[in-house]
Structures are given as C-alpha cells and as structure tokens.
Length: 164
Image (tube, rainbow, N blue to C red):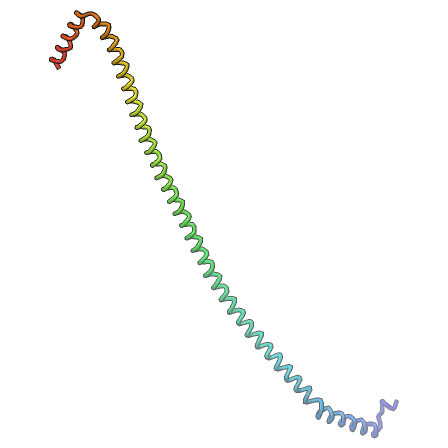
C-alpha cells in the first residue's frame, strides 16, 4: 500500500529521476526527433507538391493527348477520304479505259467484218461472173454453131449498141 500513499522521499527521487530523464531526452532526443519530424513533414509536403504537380502534368498531358488524338482522327479521316477518292478515280479511269478498249475492239471487229463482207461479196461477184461467162460461152457455142444464127445474133448486138 505504500504505492498508494507515497512518501515525500519517493516523490522527491521520482521527480529528480523524471527531471534527469527529461533533460537527457531534451538534450539528446528531442532535437533529433523534432528534426526527423520536420524532415518527414517536409518530405510529405514535397511529396504532396510533387503529386499535385504530377497530377497537373498528367491533366495537361491528357489534354494534349486528346488534342493529338483529335488531330490524328482528322488526319485519318482525310486520308481515308483521299484514299476513297483515289480508288473511285482509279475505278472510273479503268472503266473509261475499258470502254475505250471495248469500242476500239468493236470498231476493229466491224472493220474486219466489213472487209470480210466485201471480200465475200467480191468473191461471190467473181464466181457469178465466171458462171455467167461459162453459161454465156455454152449458150453462144450452141447458138453460133450455125452460121445463120451467128449473123443474126451479131446484128441484134449491133442494134443494141446503137440504141444505147
């Protein structure tokens, strides 16, 4: 029970021990503790500033990134539009070239057909002419085998020539 009712001597020695510990702590421990707390506080403040600066930079970078993405989208759209236009132009040019080639081929085919037609007509005329000559020769031989018929035929031809 002596602890519950302390004596004056115990209070005195406890107070002296406390003051000694207090002065030793004050002289050797408080400054390093306070310095480390100050450093920690500065470190935390620096970290907060750095975090704030990084957040601002990230926001700025995000905005720049969005602007770059918008520009890239516009450029992509322009490139796609230009590619479509080039494709359509190439297709149209190919179609026009194909039409020109087709028309050229058709004209050449028509010219060949006309040439072959004319050759065939000429051939037919030549054959008809040859047949007419052969038939005429046969008819004339038969009719001109008789001298009286020859003279009569010559007179009719002369009269025809005079009429024309």
